[in-house]
Length: 219
Image (cartoon, rainbow, N blue to C red; front, side, top):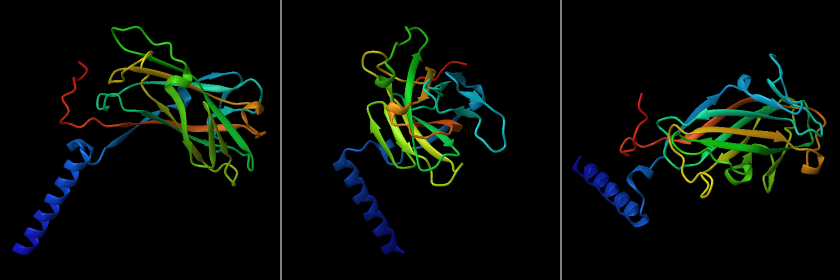
């Protein structure tokens, strides 16, 4: 029993030494992530995008056309958000199309905070594509991604919201965030002739450690 306890203490001591050498803060051992769901039926639609209620197709439909159909959603950053960390937008999508490429781009990003002017950010400056679950490539503010091999198989694509030094240098709880995403045209690399359906949208963010003395929003 004494030997087991001694070995455990040695392991803890070695771990503490490694943490000290790497300069890791105590709350970086395991960062907790939280998911905030956004309602696709509350989306604002532009340029030919449509909303349907179906047990088979995803509700937000972005057709293949030259009008750059898109949607917009918004949310308020929750109280347990870790300030100034990136916010990830996760879009679940599907399509009857296979063996082709879809292209998505950010259309705008609007951020606001009580007591200060709202920002006028360039979409590419604070809202950028990150990655997709199918083969993808990034070119500027455009992400092109392969349609799944099976029709209507759900895939995902991620965008990222970050603070920008000039327009909005910090992000914190209570900030209002509004963003838009649209489907590109042939010139953007979109080769699919069928519509892209958005099934759901969520925000993933880093949770604030309880030991961090950040001010909370008054009720």
